[in-house]
Image (tube, rainbow, N blue to C red; front, side, top):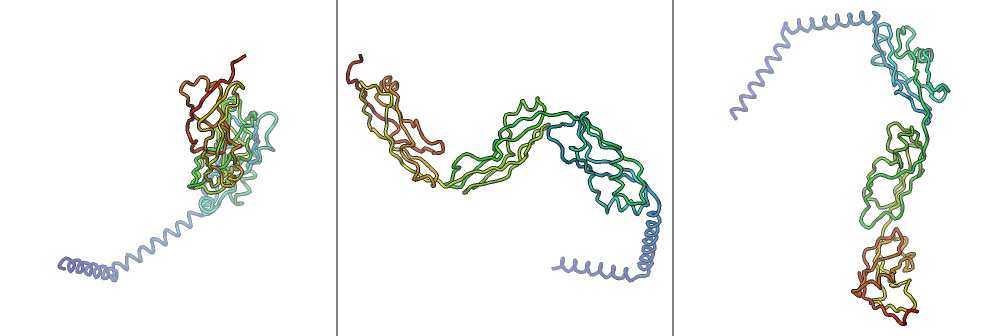
Length: 337
């Protein structure tokens, strides 16, 4: 409690001394002095802003309709530096109040058969002056013109590959191939680059907890020195609920000679598979096969063989084949001729 009382006493003392200072004659004189200083500074600023100065400003350059079949030998400038002269108040507006519209250059209309892009000084200057106040003097432009050589690039059509991670919710799976539209794109580059490319990948995309068909517009990965048209594709990922089904498949030997008899134990196998719910009624035993070759039977000395499916739909997942192997008896019914 004693400490708290001391703190409160100090606070009251400081407050009373501050209040007394603010009501004193010295504070009033200091306040009047600061007001005159501020007023003088304001008059000085107004006078200074009426004088002329020089500053540099930058105006962006935007290139439109760039043909994909050409490649510039150097990077085109993305801005133009302009030096101007005017009163300080006008220049202050340029620096803090005015946004300059980019100078647009239509590349397709300006490329020449000589293999050079030329944007003249007159064109650049006229577009700059349209954005300047009438009192402003244009002193210099850098660069004064834009001239850059270009060369033609070769074209190659390449398939698009989805690059990403797809995770489905429990009980759901990708039901068929991922669809990409367009499935191929045109790539423009020199031969050295094109020779290294066999496909174009999308940017890495993550799909989490998918429980229905997903369609997305996805950008393609950029390749330095190449132009890809189009640069965005539509990717459709078919996702469907899955269920389990058990089918009975006969075990056969299609190349068994007529003078041999084969008995297997058992003669059938049960196959457990996971299929899309919409295909449950359509999937039958005819879609599967378990075949044993006569050569395997003839060369086997144990009397048993493991079972494998020799036919199944690609989109069906097998969880189990029961039994995993069979016993068999191979008998020759009559001598070979």
